[in-house]
Length: 520
Image 1 (cartoon, one colour):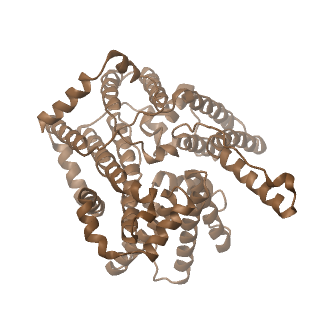
Image 2: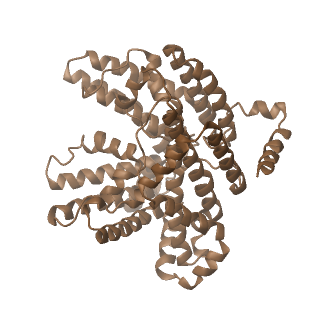
Image 3: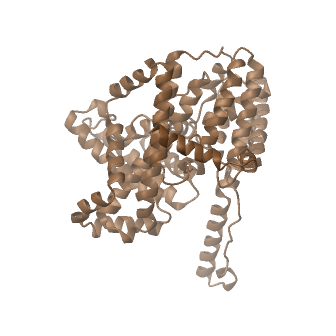
């Protein structure tokens, strides 16, 4: 094993020239820097060495981490890191003014300005082409209805607009800061560098979790102390995230899931169904893997983020699913959108409508496409129906922990398949592809090819089964394994890392794949 690892590392360095080495430090559009890349590993080691020496120098440490965060974002999106600085600066000054103004009308105006700046930037980069194309199609349809030949030929050619990585995450993070100050739940920061440090903190910058200012800002001014338990927990989370992302998610994606969704009609219904199950595991391992690494890296730096995934496929209801899946986003949508719309305070009908609006906008947040809006609608309707049923029948519960074992198992199976149904539209490249997947599952199933599939995709099946088993193990088992890592001597922890790197090298069939949520 060691010989193989050294051979791979030696091969890497032998093919590395000074010119190529220099290229590694500048932005490369085809290879943004990822937590799972060797480049980040070496940079982070160097970063940590200096960081440890600055633990007792607050301002210098904040400036140092902020500069590294800007560089990290530059390696992900090029010069668009300047956009991050501009939007953060505008919200910093708006937040300062909000705290000083007592006039309700002026305070609302300041919040509106912040919303316009943040959502305007987000709308341009993510939704400009979508909205323009939708407008062109509407004009075309009107022209057809009016039999006006001048309108029938209207077509829109999409602009080539670069989407800065993670723009949705730091936009939502900055908005939460402004809204909390407006609600007088938070005092503003009085140093520009402190606020930019909060918004740009690199572990969560490009793919979350969305960190609330009220949770993070108090930690900025505390003395940095990384205990042995915190260090071990951080390493364990990094190990878990790397394993989920590179070993499970990337492998089943490249070797199976992508093939199914690229050409659903070439595969039987049972293969399409397994492809959907594979994607459910892929997106969970990809996104929760990133969150695990982000939380783990933050712990190594002395900061703690809230949990972002809590075994979501163990949910027995769709309501419970959204308490376990992407918790930072679902709680953000609840606190700043659903409650702002009125929540459940304005009657049942309005409650259902608010749920629908929240989930439709949540779907649109994920992408400028009707597929994502439909995905949001599926979850919105499901949440509304579940809330309606609970109001009519007391035997229907909100959480699996409130159910009998049999009902909980039935609920988990039903909820998982409901979520998988939504994932079809989330993953498919078009509505036509989504329809083809569903058509094959319901009209061309052919269960007799299952064993043939298993024999042909042994590696994929092994990792899928292993991934779901690991997902459904009891929480106490995961904590026991975590404690083993925490209590292990440093050289044992280093050996665990070497073994994981070896596994990654053996399993990896292509270059490191971008995280799915980078596009959001």
